Structures are given as structure tokens and as C-alpha cells.
Image (cartoon, rainbow, N blue to C red; front, top):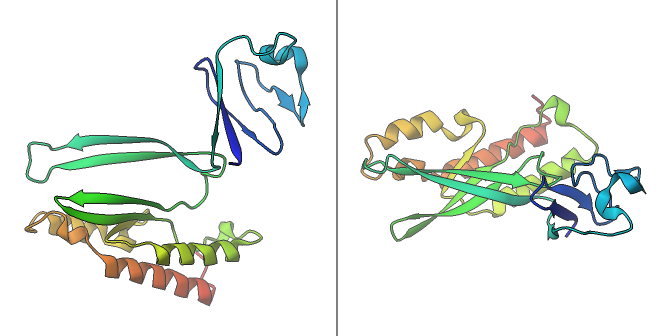
Length: 198
């Protein structure tokens, strides 16, 4: 585990890396540590009395699922659905993420992938970005995907699939597209190899 999350009596949670032990926020005092130096009397639980009220520390990976919210929608309709929101937390959650889930359609289990972008943006070229893209393609190829989507609606044919759902025998059927997923990954890698930048 690389990150500790600190929760003091229900107040906002703070992050500190285990290696640096730099606490960013707690007990309403900010900042508690500047450049690795404790601010002493400005932080009540680091003073002589120690921690004198409820506190807990949990270790989590640098990127983790903080919360999942599922809401049934159109429950009286034959095309009922569930809206799911997944909240990702951690110090490394701002980058490209791919989430996977197992969905159940009756007795059938479908693998769903929310695929990260495979488009190299002009501003996203940083030292080591090539290695990150190489890893992205390896990971995406390793994931079984029956249903998939990405932030670019046109890439996964969102409009076509939603229109087809309205007339399909099973509303799930138009979204089952493992071939489209392979094409998405293959075409993204081909653009990357040709050096295409948007």
C-alpha cells in the first residue's frame, strides 16, 4: 500500500504517502506539515497529549474505488436499467483509467469495460508517455469485453446501439460488441505507432 487515508472524527479525509509521511489536512488545520516539517502547536493531535479523540487510519492503494452508487431506473418498463456511478479516489486517479465489471443478464455473465482513451493528445506527451501507452494496450488486450464503452461516444457507436436497443428482442443485445472493442484497441494502437497526435 502506498497511501494512507486519515479520518479524524468524521472530518474530511486526508492523504499522506507512507514514504514521505506528509499529512495534508486534518482536524480543520491546514497545512499541518510544510516541506516535511511539523507545525507543532498548530495541529492539536500532534501536541504533547497525543491523539485525544477518535481517529482511524486505513491503508489503500494509490488508486481505488472509493464508492459505488447504483440507482434503478424505469423499473416498471420492459427496458428497465440501473444507473451506476463509480467514484475513484486516490492520488493517482486523475490519469487514464479503465474500469471493468461483471454484469448479469439473467443467468448470463457479461464482461463490461469502461475503456480509457487511446488517443494521444498534444498536451499529454510527457516523459515516459510511450511506455504508458504500451502498457495501456497490453492491459486493454488482456481484458475480456462483451460490452464496452469509452468517453468518446462515436468510438463505441453509442447512438447506433441505443437506437438498435429500442427494436431489439433483448435490449442488451446491441451492446454486446467484443469485435468492436478489438477494433477500438487495434485502431488506437495503429494510430499510436504511426505517431498520430490530436
